[in-house]
Length: 268
Image (cartoon, rainbow, N blue to C red; front, top):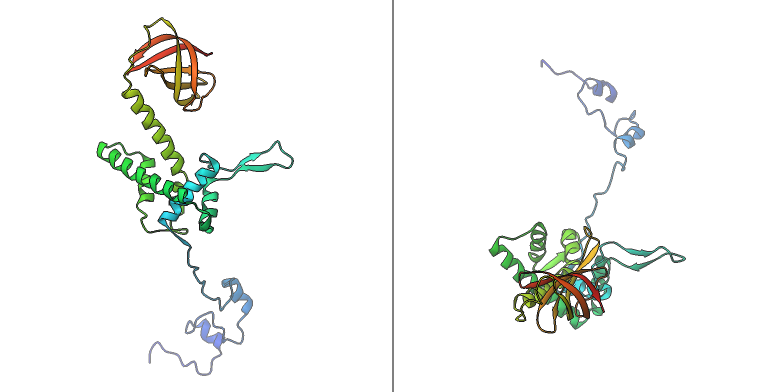
């Protein structure tokens, strides 16, 4: 027949050259396994890779473990904090995420308080995000939190790596938001009015509500409320913990938003 050649008396190599047989055939006596190894560096009869089942953790345990990590560190630690001036140097604080994973591998070490704190953290975020969404105030971070809250059964350590990293930071974030909300509420509903008049030098006993450091001005901005329920705002060279009572002297600079702004403040 046209187009066909009698190959019965030909060697395998001759057939290969005519294109009637695959160039790579391990049955060919002239076949080199060294060439095959170059083509398949993993071995000719490579076994298929078996996928390992990923570890999963119930949602309530993950939130409890995140709360426990916050309890251990007292803050959110994103990167390990080293004491480099010690001999030898050592890790002073581990990452919250690493501590959280330790608790998940040993869930018997989680306390009832951890579980309650984790559930409260989760409930607060759900309520807060609903409020923000209604107001149209969702940020990029809020969108990330939404992905975390969307996991309602189990966190998979393989597919939820990003969500697990986020959830480790949320107890600290919720604590800051609660302090801020409490501060704003106390300032808003304070009934004492303003302190003095602009230019007056005043002395007051003040409970610190919040303190934040300004990198722009290199000082701490402190909001507080006097024992006469008068909100005040001033800058200071040192930060002060919320709840601390101070006796201060300063000059009234201005009145705004139910706050008295003080200048040239010193702590007595």
